[in-house]
Amino acid sequence: MPAQRKYEAIVIGSSAGGLSALTALLAALPVNYPLPIMIVQHRYRDQMNLLEEILQNKCKIQIRQVEEKEKIEPGIVYIAPPDYHLLVEGNLTFSLSSDPPVSFSRPSIDVLFESAAETYKRALIGIVLTGANKDGAAGLLAIKKNGGLTIAQSPAEAEYPYMPQAAIDKGGAAQVLTLTEIHARILNI
Image (cartoon, rainbow, N blue to C red; front, side, top):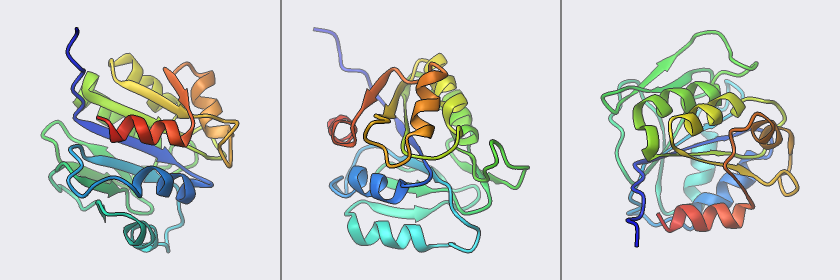
């Protein structure tokens, strides 16, 4: 029997409808979850800690907003701060950038996914959830090209199907799953 593949990190991108989808995925994860989870959720600049507070009230796992040069640790959900791109560095720390928006978004899902794909290669899981633009499609494809596992939320289930559909259409999604299936997949890593 072949050895189970070892994953080291998960990246998730969401936009419109993302709070419900993220809650469904994260609420039942244990405090000692073995991987770091990095999230870009599109949001307004003035929503500094609101997303983190709402999710933390519903989740056991630690949720926090990323700080510049922070070391990536397992068992923590890291969320990109509003109005900054989030990048994963080769030394497993984060960097933040105020470069121009990508796909009309800052933070951009593509920026996180592409930098994480370069760092983690085959050991990365990328997930695109509900949203109303195409951000994440190029990034998910980069993860797939680097050998990582790529998942798009089923557009039929997504509150806003355009973003996962864009990832599927670009060829980046190896699997198209419901939130329940995605949750089961990441819970059993």
